[in-house]
Image (tube, rainbow, N blue to C red):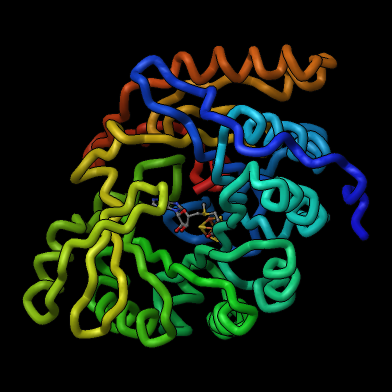
Length: 344
Ligand code: SAM
Ligand code: SF4
C-alpha cells in the first residue's frame, strides 16, 4: 500500500490533444525529478555543482499532478530522469503512484533513465510497478576510466544494477556518450558486452549543454565516423525499431543485437519530434536545444484549477519551436542549462 493507492485512475485511452504549431502530436514527456546526482560525469556536470534549493524543486505530489495532467492530454510515454532519479527521496512512491496510469491503460510506458548505481536495490520494485524497460548510462567497462569519467563512480555497482534489472525481467538499453579520447576505441567491446547480455545499445553524440570544465570540441566524435569504423568489421543492417525516441537503429549481424545512434549534431531529428521535457522545478522545455521555457510551477503554486493548468500546457505546446541548431564548434553552449537540469 502506498500513499497514492486511493487516488482514482485517469480516464482511459486519451486521444492526443497536444498538437504543436507544426502538426506534431506531443505524446512523450520526460520528467526530471531532481537536479542532484551521486556522480559528476565530466560532460554533464561541473565538479562543484550548486544544486537548487529544496523549495524550488517540485514536491512528489506536484510532479505527480503535472505528469498526470499530461497523461490526461494524451501523453502515452513517461520517462523519469534527472539528475539521478533514484537518489530522489520518495522516488519509488512516485513510480508507484504513476503506475496507476499503466493499469488504467492511459499510459503505454513508464520508464526511467538512470546511471544504475542504485538500480540493484530498486529493480524488483520497479518491475512490480510495471516498469518494463530502463535506460542505463554507461560509457566504459574499465573501472579506472569509469571512475575518471564520473568523478568517483564505482563500475561494479552499475553492473550489479544492470544484472539485477535483467533478473527482474526489465529490458535494459545501455546508453553511451561517444568520447573521442576516452572511449572511442572501446565502443566495439561495450556494444558486444551489452548485446551478449541481451541489452540494446545506443550511442550518443556529446551535446553542448551547460558549462563544464573541459572543452567539448576536443571530445566530440561524429557518430557517422563511428558507424563507418564499426562497419569495417561488423555488418550493420538498418532496421525499423520505433521506441518513440530519436535513435536510428541498426542490427549488428555478428552479435544479433540492436545498436542505435542519436545524432543531434550531425543529423537533426526535429521533424518527427514528439517530446517535451519538464524540469524538476516545473519548467517545461519544448525543445532540448533552445531556451524556450514555460513556468508551470508558478501556475501550480498560484492554485491553478485543472482547467487552468491544461490551458498553460496548451499555450506552451503551441509555441514549440520547429527545431534546434546545435553547433559543437560554437564558443558557448547552445543553452546554458545542464543536461542534468533539463533531464536527458
Ligand atoms: N543520471 C541519469 C543517467 O546518467 O542516465 C539520468 C540523467 S543524465 C543527464 C541522462 C543522459 O544524458 C545520460 O545518458 C548522459 O550520458 C547524457 N548526457 C549528459 N550530458 C550530456 C551531454 N552534454 N551530451 C550528451 N549526452 C549527455
Ligand atoms: Fe549524473 Fe547522469 Fe549527469 Fe552522470 S550523466 S552526472 S549520472 S546526471
